[in-house]
Length: 225
Image (cartoon, rainbow, N blue to C red; front, side, top):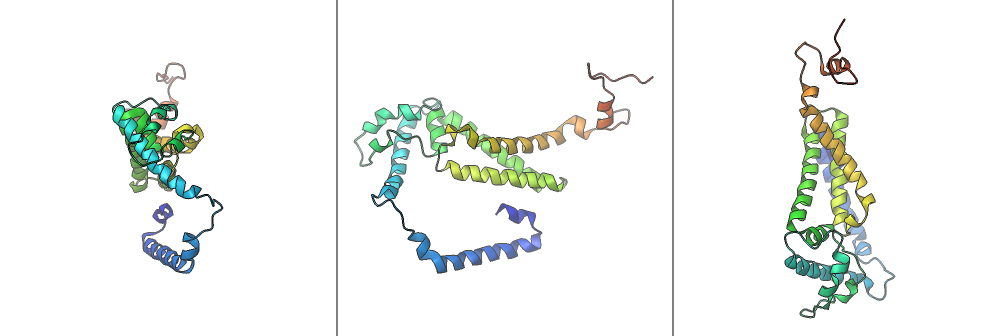
């Protein structure tokens, strides 16, 4: 969907309709093959994995209820969940979670850092998404800056999709691309707001000319002979 923004407006609707038609044709022609994909897990492990997600949600909510503000501590879900697995007041099977890490980044952050950490985490992702969107929507930006905004949005969407099914906080390498693109987007916005990049000095020089006349040691203007 992100590449649609790079096309001329008159082509966007045509391409969108084409994608929908191809998808509909594919579902009609190959729908049964897609929904009935043969699996090798004859022991029903796929169905068990689905039920485990309900168990994760149940345990997470119990843990959150006991420490709602600041949570149980970052990266502590694995060991602190153990007492909650003995709960037999419901029909969910909880013991299978004993050797597993969390399955959802947002639930993991909520349990481990509480409502305070979760709010900050979501606010940070929203701010990064807003920064990328501002680059896309700003007509005064150059084309490569628009491309950076689109790439930032695509990276954030991919991260969110993966975060729904994995605890990405367990791996630092899962974040480097998101941090890089977000940093570039925020830097581009901050650069335009900086006075040195937008104002002309009082003596009529451009910002680049003004900086070129500064002393490398004290950043004080070099007197002209």
